[in-house]
Length: 164
Image (tube, rainbow, N blue to C red):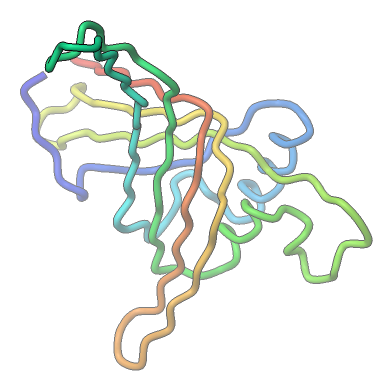
């Protein structure tokens, strides 16, 4: 792959898997048309592996370096506030009436696709699996765009490069 991308080359969409939590996300994705997610800005994904170094007594450099737990997280900014991200976080807990008891938290997959129009057929896709939104914010400045933001955690991540 030799392509470089900008945000103009990207799109972000929601995909769902079957199951109770996936079905809850599907309701929101269908209602709000989240393929692609419109007006997204400042999408950030971070993968952190807890690398641990083992130091022997009397040695300054580690004898072994081992991988530990892997954590996937990120954030999405959005300039089109319609409740979709809040509903993806709370499901029916944000549906307009207070739920009587416990409710299902939606789980979904995010797909970040990058394709340079000058090189059709060459694309890079990052899929983030088992996403749960863990925070949501709404920012209404006096003289700028109204933005919502969400941060998330996920189970795992994969990457696929395509070229013709």
